Structures are given as C-alpha cells and as structure tokens.
Image (tube, rainbow, N blue to C red):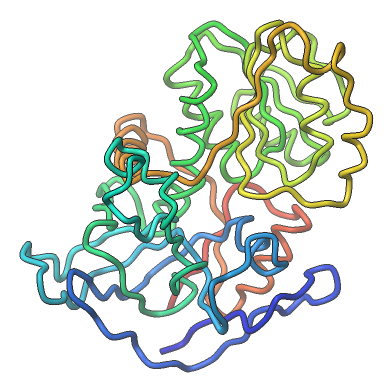
Length: 342
C-alpha cells in the first residue's frame, strides 16, 4: 500500500519534504481490531509537533494522521458485530488501559498508557490502517468523507474546549487563532449559545475575514485589545504570545482554555513579561485540553450532524501531504486541510 511516512525528526523551517512516499505492506489485523481502507485523513497541527519533535513519535518510520475516514474491509477475531463494508472514523485516541482511575471515570484522555493514532501507532496518511474496535466511530450520512475527517479532532477537541470554558449563553468568548478547530468552535457557539458574542484574534488578515464571514462579532490582531472584556478565551495557537494577550483581555474571574498539545519555543521570552497584577490577578484561571475521549468524538459527531455544522475544507492528494503541512505552517489556506486517497 502507499503511505507517507516520517523517518526522522526534522525542522519544517529547513525541510519542506519531511514525509516520504513509500510502499509498505497492508497491516495485519489482530484480535479485536479492524482493517480500514482509508478514503480521507485530516491534516492537523499536531503532525507538525510530531515532525519537529515536540511530541515525538514512538518509533520510525511511522505513518502520521489521526483524523481518519474509511471503510472496514476486514475484522479480526473477537469482533462480533458485523462491521465489514461500513464507514467509520478513527480519532486521536488509539487506545488506553481501561483499568486506571482515569479510564474508569470516563477520562481515558488522562490515562498514563494513552496511545495516540499516528504517534504511538501508525495512522491515516496511508491507504490502509488497523484500529481497535473500541475506538472507531460511525459517521453520520450527512457528511462526505472529506467533511467528516476534521470533525474527529478539530471538531471534537473544539467541543471539549467549549465545555472546559464553562461558557454561559450571553457571555463573551474570545478565540486566539482561527484555523480548523477555531472555525468549528465559532459554528458551534453560534448554534448552541446564540446570545454569545465571539471575538476572534489572528495575525492573518485572511483568517480574520473568514471569521467575519462566519459571524464573528469582532476580529483583530493578536496584539489588539478586544472592545469588551471576555469571560472565556480559547487559545488554539502554537505560540506563547497569545497566552499573555489572552490574559490581558480576560474579565475578572475569566477562564483561558489552551487547546494545544504543545507550544513552540520561538516567542517563549514573552513569558518574562508576565505580570501577576495585569495578567493573573482577580481570580483568572488557566486550563489546558489534554487529548480527547471516545465520548468527546461520539458527542460531537451527534451535535454536528443535528446542527448542520460542516467544516470548510481544502483537499490534497495523499502524495501532496508535504504541501498540505507547509500550507498549514504558513497559514496560506483557510479552514481544515484533508488528504484524499485515490
């Protein structure tokens, strides 16, 4: 089968072709697993973190990708339900131990044995993959394969971020950055919190225009002050400056939710200017998002379909995965990026 594999940690700053197109065997299906013929796979900023070593893969070469849509073509021993021929998605959560206090309380995203698709096991930048029967998700007919792919991470993690803000209808919400996840958050908020105003911060003028087209109440650069204090802010960027600027824009008692698996180090010195009185005082809170649970994926797919929420997507061939990653890094396209298999 064809696959785009990462062979070593590298810098996207100096290497525009981190992935190699190779032919590898179709994976073997083990007990309680299914073999999926992949039709589409979303491209996520987390792949950049894997490539550059901020969240390094467990082995090399590895197939990245954790927003996978495809059809089950084979099921292993122990899979009793007839799944062959049906369409499913595979998300960031590949497996967890199922026994620890976190798994038993529905927080398998915090499990110490959490394994991620495309980081700890081969993912979806390929024609086929195997996945656990426990962690595949039926896709509503409302979505095409391309439309469904970003829902599995950008959408599910965005929905978890909203929940962690504790947002109440009518409060002001800020979004730092406006990529795949944030544009779905804006759609969700407009549907579920109709009296909430959304304030979008982005360095990119095209992203700001896109946010306005989707119904943002205000847009501005990350360095700007919002016209109103914000009760909650979700930061979806890979940088540190938006964290500091978010805290400046928070209302007293407000909460910042950081939706990023890692932060890059280029602007880390901005934290030296963090002021307790200006940024943290008055009971402001900071909370981070750590992975997603299976319930997050199921709940969001149900919400998205019932709310007619569809992501804006840019399509690429599997062979063009490197271009998709560089476009993502350079923010030269809007919405979500999706690889489409032949």
